[in-house]
Amino acid sequence: MTSERYAQPASVRWWREDLLKDARAVVVGAGALGNEVVKNLALLGWGTVVLIDFDRVEGGNLGKSVLFTDKDIGRPKAEVARSAAARLNPDCTVVALHGELRTVAGAGLFARMDVAFGCVDNAAARVALGQLAGLAGCLFVDGGLTSWEGAVRLYAPDDTRPCYVCTLTEEDLSDLTLRHSCLAYARRAQYGQGVPTTVLGASAVAALMVQQAVKWIHHDPDALPVRLGEEIRLDLAHDQYARTTLPRREDCWLHPQAASPAAAPDAWARTATDWAGLLGSWRDATNEPDAVLRLPMEINARTTCLACGSTRPVNHVQESTGGPEDGPGRCADCGGRTVPDLSNLVTGDEPWALLSPGDTGFPPWSWVEADPGDTADADTAVHLELPGLPAEPELARLDPRRRG
Image (cartoon, one colour):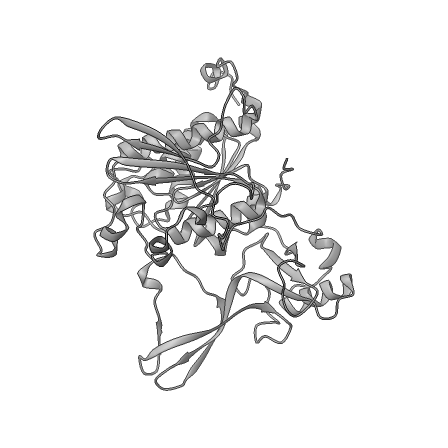
């Protein structure tokens, strides 16, 4: 790091440049809000930033996304934002992952991060992000926007505090497939009008998000309180700011519990590369011949047409962006509706058992649950990190963070 670049912030009484240089963050969503978060992190000299987005730049993004230009239209948002951030600050390592969150990032990636920033526009993506961050013990800083309002919510890696799903109403839960569901505008988006936002709201909310993360990595809760389990809401139209405590639901059906892998991959997987081999290696290592693996995503073995009965092998995870386009598939022969054959258990008999996790759509550092019996009881299961490293050398060299 060049000393001139960071001279002014370093003069802040509690500011520690060394902590920022070592800090790691994953930013999910590279729209207007994600642009501002990445810009702030780069200018601060944040050590490593992993940027995830499945979308491409469109003309409508240019008026509110500081990292995009006319020349970027049609290119992956994550790649464009990565290049722009690198130009802002070459000291910052930025890695772009283009794709849907669960198919490009396993829980092990979040175990190697300090903070996960949610810059997404729908409840389904927030649920997935909250599950990954919570399981890995990573702070989840979630941001949301409307035209003149914004909100920042902090979900701690602590199962005694609220998670994202704790805050959802029954109506919210029924709307999980909406692409655009920020704050109060879910109904409007359902009819295809989207959520109108501006760069003003995005910049204000992103500043709050990154400020909370900066305080988090400084580890001084007395001098620098981090608003864990709270929502910070901004009303830019009426110049109002409010904080509220988020509820924790005792009956939350998706409350994440922080975990860590029971054993390193090289201690149990040996040379196994496919699902059947991995299961067999774990059974041998634990002397549990009936052990099964439970997966964080369902694999679709085949689709069957309800009209003509034809089947088509798939053997891949069900990818989803959380939108209405993720509806029923159609038969290539007759156009009829098809249904998938889904499973999240590995017993060794599946049609995809001889395929590798990567072949079936699982990213590096995915975590699975291993249970000694065929009931797949969560109370007796342990977590395992699948073998294999990311293709990106900047990620492959990262070790898991020590929590606590």
